Length: 593
Ligand code: ADP
Ligand code: MG
View 1: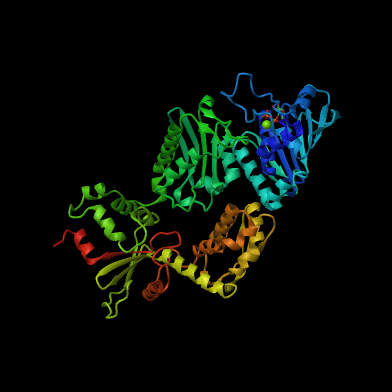
View 2: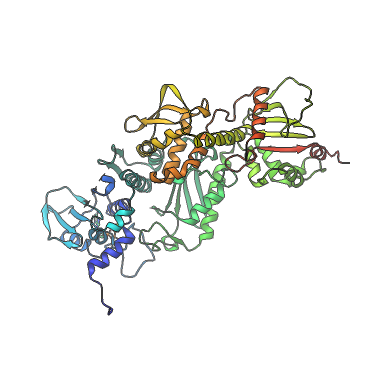
């Protein structure tokens, strides 16, 4: 075939492939246009997960006849001066969103400027443009998108369920609403019950979007470094979540997913939050617009910093400073002493006996345990006020077990046991998690997991998207002994729970599952996720830390651990016990021969 210039509608469809990936990306482009037009109120309406209808109404500047006609042309924008991309202060600038949307849907734009006597309307149906017609309306713009991807079966095939697409729309709107707290946002339509967020201060918006739970468990960020201004709220480590949906990143008012920022936050929390948990955070970064390139990808959610290292260190500093301020809220000084003894050998030896080095101690502590000190130290991070529970002393029995005989329970979570020549410390919560996990799997192998009725169904209020996901997952969860059903638009009723979990923390369990489902967000693959679901359930069994155990219960746990495969590590890969040999203890006290 000879080379030829492609026709415009084909060019637009090719571009649409990049800009318009799914309904949520259409919503993002249109809301950004409304923000750029100076709107003070934006109403987002969707139906059929956005496939049937997306409608964005704003009260911004509006467009006159010439602009309206130009707006749907490719590379037509009012936001870029001829001399370039170096100083972008608007959300849009590429001039291709409306043209792209018009190529893969039925697009209607109605608009009216402040001084016009009437509004005007233009329609584009798969790149075929209509003439301009009058339209009665108030100042502003209404964009309607119908039958998205109706002519693009390849794209339709990749869309998820209406519910999942509607949840993605809600996520996009949340991020735009956080970036523009002064704008009144309404999210409406057949896909959900309405959300209404009047405009105001940033803190109020963060509370509307992320919930009062978050703002109560977060500390303010305020650091300026290398010309990078970092503000927002950082969640306490103890308030971590099971997925990254509670992480919000903004650069110069634009919601982004940027590796530099993600990496910086992960690094800042590395010592406080386990690998499989995600801190909640609302992070706002301001830099000189000339120091960042947002023209990396058509969706504009990726960017490139000129000084990535400077941004990274500013973010890490901001988070660490904020968490240091909040230190006393997260853990007690006793726990910190324990942690530093294992983590910073030079500190530990400086004020105590020189006879052992922290390094040696640490090596001996992790002996026989699969994981290493890096993941060992944080296991102490959750220690509460010092409290101990000593059982009446009984002589060591003749029979010896690998994990020893229980002697005491410390901090309502650590079992102190003794075997022939070692002191054994067991993290009862971690150990119990593993045991429950293994039992789940054994039971599941021979049919549905046994459940127990709740006398009164437990009703849990949650965001609508979460309720939808749980409802959809209900048949799978029933195989695991968890029976729940929808209870109104924003609540779930739990009727039966897995018998294995005992008096489980039902709220926490259901919230964690919802987080997991949101992360995976493809219900058809749920059957492949059984292990992950079971792991989450096991976390919420009855012998969490904080439960006082009798000596016989402790010994039963130890014996069960000895019988159960993998019981040396909890399901998150951390050790469930450590063993200190008598010689280790002697070394600690300088009694080495
Ligand atoms: P871009 O936002 O990159 O300029 P778009 O295709 O999204 O490209 O929009 C093209 C142009 O149409 C914009 O530059 C703007 O002038 C105009 N426009 C789009 N949406 C609105 C709106 N809601 N209100 C006013 N003008 C708008
Ligand atoms: Mg735009």
